[in-house]
Amino acid sequence: MNRRELIKHIALLTGSAVVGSEFFLSGCKSNDKEPVGFFTERDISFFDEVAETILPKTNTPGAKDAEVGKFMAFYSADCYDELQLKTLKEGIKNLNDASDKKYGSDFMHVAAPQKQELLTEIDAEAKKYNGKNNGQPPHYFTLMKQLVLFGFFTSKPGVTQVLRYVPVPGKYEGCVDYKEGETSWA
Image (cartoon, rainbow, N blue to C red):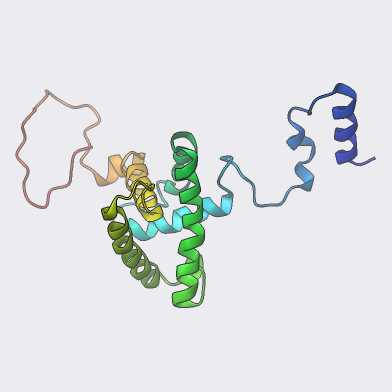
């Protein structure tokens, strides 16, 4: 008797589904796990590539260093409604389709300058789409971009190595002049 049959028999005998049956069937699943429920490991890698294109590593950490892809998956799964999640998931396919149409390869496999060019074009498209405000959810790229920025600038590398950060601040100063070119405070 194999694992699937055993689980079916247990379910029939007890009159309910076996809680944790995924554990018994883990040998039967594909390698493309769904750690966040809605997004797969491949989706998280995709989010990392999009994030790194928006916030690349320079003399400061990039989005991959902050594991923004993982943040995007977890945060959206916890905080977005079904329609927004569906929009974000379809956005992965739409972005890959746009890359394939323009460059003959999916987004993950094109060069960095091509990724940047494509995201710039899609960002302009998203701004037009969102400007119409037709009661639809935001453009998929708007959702992605917001998650990238929020995820990075709330991460440890984003706060401590990119923004100005004082771990033990002094007195409160409510009004500090901003000088052109200064980085923001964490």
